[in-house]
Length: 51
Image 1 (cartoon, rainbow, N blue to C red):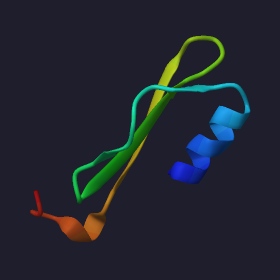
Image 2 (image 1 turned 90 degrees about the vertical axis):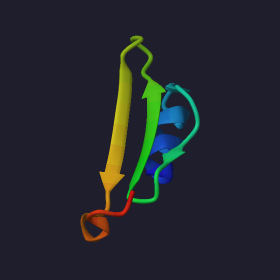
Image 3 (image 1 turned 120 degrees about the vertical axis):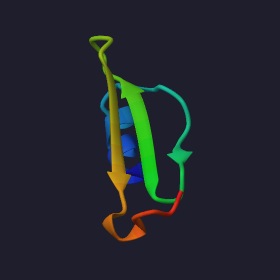
């Protein structure tokens, strides 16, 4: 996730906040050069019921 965001920032995106880490889910977001906000996340399938 962090590597993807690093590449997006290098291509002109602007970070839309810091990482969000809930243990079972991790997300990042950015605003692209056209102003669209993108948020991507990973949910650990082995963390079922861990909140």
